[in-house]
Amino acid sequence: MPRRCRCGRRRRDNATSVSRGLLLFLSRRLLSALLFVIVVAASTFVLARLAPGDPTSELAMAGADASVIAAERTRLGLDRSLPAHLGAWAAAAARFDLGMSSRFGRPVRGLVLESAGNTAVLAAVALTLATIVGLPLGLLTGARPSGWLARLVTPLSIALVSCPPIVAALALLLLAASKGWLSASPGSLALPALALALPLAATIERLQSQATTDTMGSLDLVAAAARGVPPSRLVWIHAGRQSLRPVLGIYGLLIGGLFSGSLAVEWVTSWPGLGRLTYDALVHRDLFLVSGCALAGAVLIAIGNVAADVIRAAADPRVRA
Image (cartoon, rainbow, N blue to C red; front, side):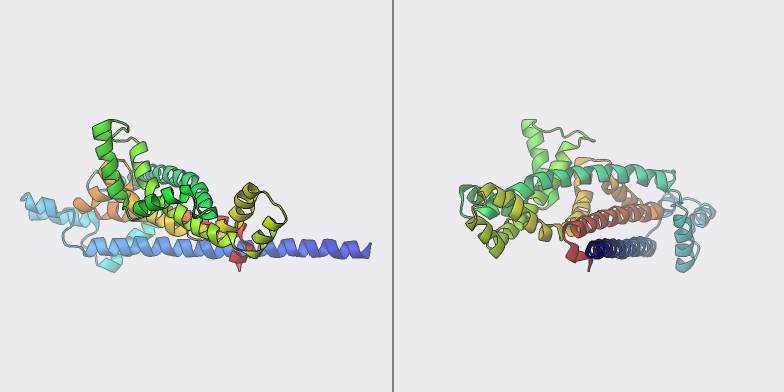
């Protein structure tokens, strides 16, 4: 009976230690994500403020009266010093007030939320497609690197990894215009999602293939094969579980690249996301809208990175240390 008590107490202590380690890991990641969002948003505001021109430049070019231009600069806060203007914007942003768009005459928060939702949907669909295609192909090509599937998939993956998403979008647009297999109409999800998913799936396939090849040569899998474990179970269960950990480690980087690549793809394919909104804000020197788009993009990247880190920590407890 005392032995059982000691075993039960040891299990409870281990569970408490794991929970505490996971909470500390999550707290560090959330703090890093918050710092990332603050730095990106503040840096974008400063750079946009220091860039040549401002929203009143069009008024000056149109020959507006000096008093009208001065009143507009006062309304936008451009007559303040940079530190004062940044502090006022940061205090308002903390209350979820991102100012008014000089381009659209609407609150920036509503514009950004609508576009950020569209970008999040596009990124989620592209990442899901890339994962569904890339992980199984990587397991198969890594388990049999000299097989016919590896000879077929490897050159194609290398070509797609070298292909920027905007090039893939242009190629798919040409295919849609000539063959009609995809819809090229504004707001169509299939074309921009494929343009982002294809290079990403190739990247995941290459990483998963290399990780699987390394795992298949490990001593525990060689011993499992010698004990008569079926090849399918050896690949899909044992090798898949072990090789997935290093691949999950770079998912945060993949998510960051996904959002950065989506900006150009959205503009080319007329997808109503943050990419097109950012382009309009930059062209018209809309300071508050540029800053709001950068803030929303940083939040999306931070959420994706935290989610990837949590999944990786759940799959590999060593990450929490």
